[in-house]
Amino acid sequence: MAGFRMTTNIPTLQEIEKVVTADVAAVEEAAMDEKERYLIDLSKKYTEPNFLIKSNGAGVLARGDIAAIKAKSKSGKSFVCSIFASVVLGTPWGDLQPTFEGGKVLYFDTEQNKLNTAKLAKRVHALCNFDIHSNSDKFKCYALRQMDMKDRLPFIKKRIEEEKPALAVIDGIVDLLQDFNDIKQSSDVIQALMQISADNDCSVLFVLHENKSDENMRGHVGSMSAQKCADVFQVEKRKDGTLNVTECECRNLPIPDFSFAIDSYGIPRPMQTQKQLQAAEKTAVKEAKFRQVFAEIFSAKGTSIIRYSDLVSMAKLHFAVEDRMAKENIKWAKENGILVVNNDGYSLDKCNGAM
Image (cartoon, rainbow, N blue to C red; front, side, top):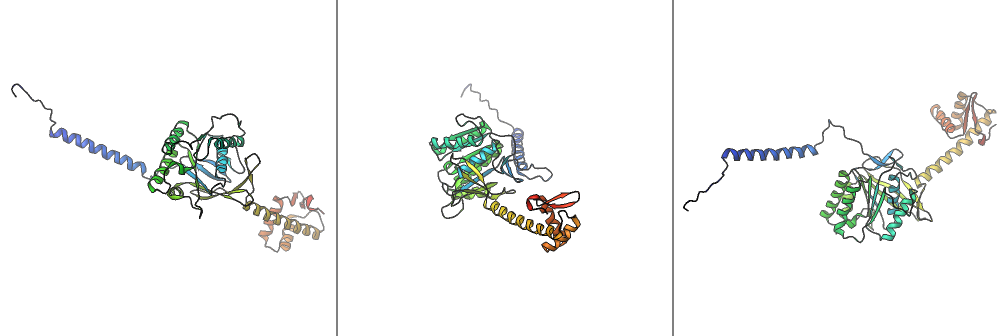
């Protein structure tokens, strides 16, 4: 065309090579950053789990991790959630102790209607001695049963990001996916909860039913939970109506079992576990035996006070044990109030019938 002058800005070969080299370098740098992000560096000191609850020296519900409660249908899983929530809010329960003054808790109920979810929230308030007719900024409870399934997880994620709780409870997890037997859906939900807990430095505790035929958690989501959870608690309902909780799977030291009964107001109250009852019975039998043997020792000696060396010699004879065990028995008797130490030696406690 006459008078037409085409102007083009074609990059030179050197300019193209420069851009390509820069892009490749950027990709390589990103890949290196990603590799370094996941590489374990043994020269670094990694922090120990930051547990929300401790019991007898063991901790559970670590920040940045997930945990699960499993049981048969109608076996008290929500009561256990209420107990854990109240402890994280700062109220000791039985041997369960909060590790700090009290954190925020979010509770997401996907199973119950608003009336029953409100009863659950009031139960947590009652356990914490909060006003059951007023809301608390530290504890917020949501009833999500009427929400579309696809909207539940995004809603939970947003609330956690905004509120930054120490603990988020999801009761129950199967309502976050269409098919709990679908491998991809199960993996995606568990992965999302792990990411949410890590990004927001909170513990995410969820509830899952057991199979009717065994004690495994239902479906592929149950299998994924067993693999990924730092803590898995099992709730067992006894014939007498009391409930026992066992930490059946854990990545750290498990907490001891605990048991509870539901009082007339619907509040879970601590009870002794079967193991604790057996231990108490064993201790009672041992104490009765020791009281009898030491009473016989003082009766044979014919005095109300015996020097330690003489008491060891007589304990060896009456218990039919060696020197070390005789001393251990004397120590146990002293610690349990059977023997009393004074300046002149050992004497029987008054309730044991002193000479």
